[in-house]
Amino acid sequence: MNAMDWKRVAFGDLTPHQLYELLQLRTDVFVMEQACAFQDMDGYDHLAVHLLGTAVEASAVVGQVAPLIAYARLFPAGVKFAEASIGRVITRDTVRGTGLGHLLIREAMASVGALWGVQPIRIGAQSRLIAYYRQHGFVEVGATYLEDNIDHQDMVWNP
Image (cartoon, rainbow, N blue to C red; front, top):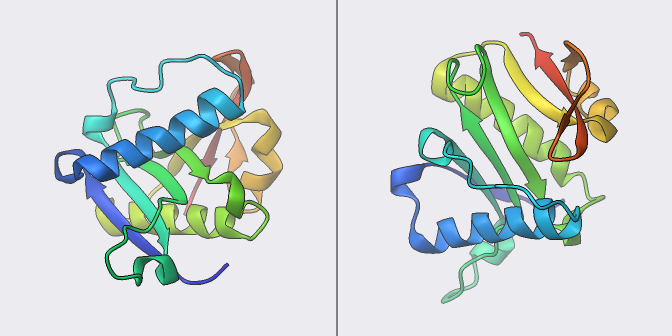
């Protein structure tokens, strides 16, 4: 994957275009692609820092807005879990298999550290992605559970 432009944006600082793009990407992946009807807008977006990833070469085109191709939602400890957390982790389907997902996770973890200090991070991973998150040092905690008709597993990374 080529160089990325990462932005960490609080909800109140999102432009209408950024908000539209992140909600559209989340709907494309979590609702349409995964054929899962669920309430994506869950009342937590206003408490999150939104990590937005665009390709640098796309950002350099004058007069064009680079499309959002990677996204994650970041929370300080005490909002979603006792630990800091990362959620709604997505890459656009056109860039999957390029390594961008791994870059996104590393950037999200580094962003949590930069924003709130290095500390444990909890995620609610889809069970099919457990091995993927293990590659980044996350370990399973608790039992598997059903969320939106998809098996999930809580995982924690400890520094």
